[in-house]
Length: 297
Image (cartoon, rainbow, N blue to C red):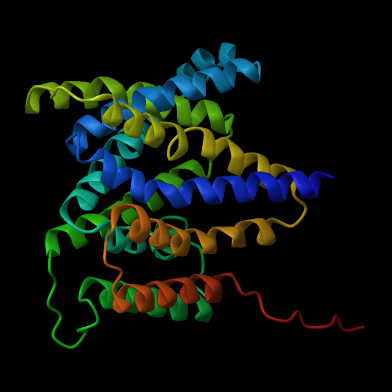
């Protein structure tokens, strides 16, 4: 029964994550990247507070922060503040069908950064995964003209790749965090809000936004940053087969491209699909454990 629930939670999370690239582009029609981050962060914080109340954990929030205030301040400045500001700007500068696969290479970036900062060994298959993944990045960024290395929007590509560094850095810093994960993420939103609100006011007045814009940014806050995270945690907590649940994430970018083509009307280049396949193959190679050698007597 637990495995069935785990699969259900995992599929729900993956399907919701598949929609967010489309939601990003819709929301950016109404908000600037910094305004989008502020509004979505408020929605996410409210959602996580409700979840913490429901789980009976909210009373631990202050104690958790006081135990490591500078640590949570650093986490909040990395994610959501810097990560989402840069990610949303990357989506603002280029088609979502290009930004989303580029951002998807974060797991490969994490391997390299874990070797540098955590001293983890890079296996041969990790190097192969990096080669495939970053070849996919180049194919997408150059629209298949790999030899010419001509980028339509080099700044947008750079921001999408920078977001993978920030996301990987965030998870590396989280490796030694023993606090409840929901409270940890909630604290990140709470400590970052004064910085993001201040920056948004400094950069200009907020526009008059119709209800469609508020609905879109609320969707981003709920299903990119908030509820979906809890669904994914529940899936990993209930399953006995973490690899099977983790592999569900590989269907997300392909569903996302389909939604972008159908709802937004973005042209999906063959090079985007080819590059995404290379990135996913790299991630699969990275996860492959090979055959275990039989124990000798």
